[in-house]
Length: 147
Image 1 (cartoon, rainbow, N blue to C red):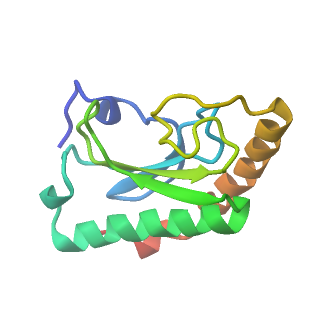
Image 2 (tube, rainbow, N blue to C red):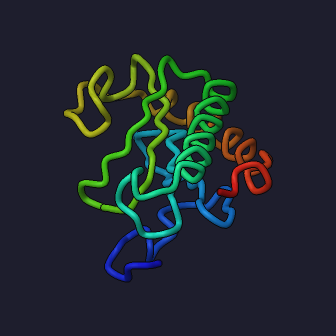
């Protein structure tokens, strides 16, 4: 079911890295947050409890697999997982690599900016993110995580 007024129903939400019958993994390409990934449920639902238990499990397995690929590929200090839906009430998870020297750390990426990150550091992290995106594209999400 789709809602034409919903951003994630009417837009991809970023560069689709992989998609299967129930969800998509996207790179929203946020300049300040290299390697940020969103896992978006295709059907227009707002909450995890709108899903059947096997669907919840499949979604969280993908979120955890993306987290592991982020940890393996770009080695951030920390990975944040977030699912809000306050502005876009369509079920999606943010998988966010964090570094102690990123512009917002230790606050959330939606908090106040605390520092500027040198362009050279951001460029290096964006380059690492390209390798991450390729690893996500190569991972067999389609056969493993169809709910």
